[in-house]
Image (cartoon, rainbow, N blue to C red; front, side, top):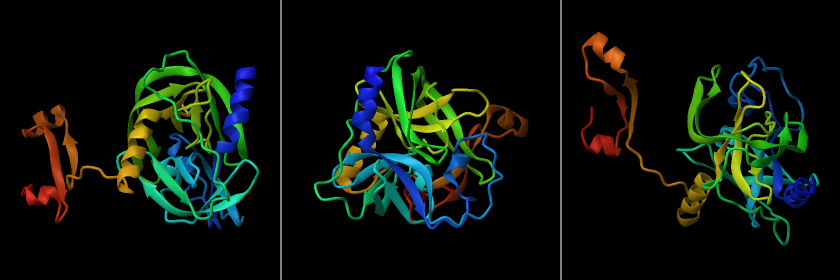
Length: 274
């Protein structure tokens, strides 16, 4: 118990709540990313701000890591620290390949923010104790839950059927530490208080089945961002659908990717893909 208490005291000031300023409704709520959730949430919200997720501070100048699906809309975002202080988000950078986003705070406090320590996910073991911190249900800031690593190398499809948005997440960490809507983007920690993953999704089909993106993947994205000031990713320039073996046999066509669109000026267009 003392280990958990010490980790919470150390890490809580380094975890922030992500909020939307002047929300007009919940139709685009990132909570829908927690697949299987009830989507009937379209009532007007007249509050001045709405808590929508969690993040953690990786640079004292006000650089914060969260999930891309938390800040996937063109809205004005705020971050709220452990003491309730609010800071406007100046810029949002989204990784096109992973469910990762980086926020830049407009006016950080003098002396900067306290910075969280990043660990490694390369040596995780099933059964290892973990701690999750986040804004549970978009209401309860810095909620702490504990559990173990339930599985490694999982692949899941998460998203919102009503928004017709899904994303494939591979090689994620499965945990039984309670993860609720609002925890998304928060840290999954080891008993040393080091971040080993970003809490991302939860299945409503079972109890205590949550998933986190490994921190080593996040560190790769951060290194890429620090070198270029953006997320630089290879870009082919096509949209496509996969023809399965069964569909190929039934229609007497090749199995593979059916190109549906070629983006003008892309590498695919230069290579004359049609």
